[in-house]
Length: 139
Image (cartoon, rainbow, N blue to C red):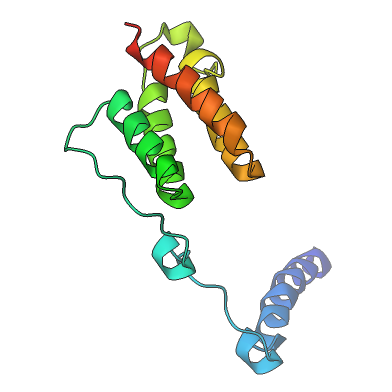
């Protein structure tokens, strides 16, 4: 019985001492992981805000994207499209459909516009943006 009790005490003591033998990451030439992730402004990826009024609608953001593309300002157009897509995704659905993503219609047209811009396909972006603007007008 004493042998078992001694083995249990020894088994508990070994992991505790093994943890203290490891040098800290700084001693091994490594830096500790950051406690917070950097935001877009620290990474240099901040997109310019589109000129829309407070409480802007999806159509307002799509018009801002159209104007930004007309001025060849792809970063601002991208931001306006992302904002429009966010508003289009904010929808009311039955609870049973809450986990089903909306990929068609207006959301699909906005996503296609963003994808075309990402590929550098200006004609494709113009066409899908025009489709998105038409779909946004429908109730």
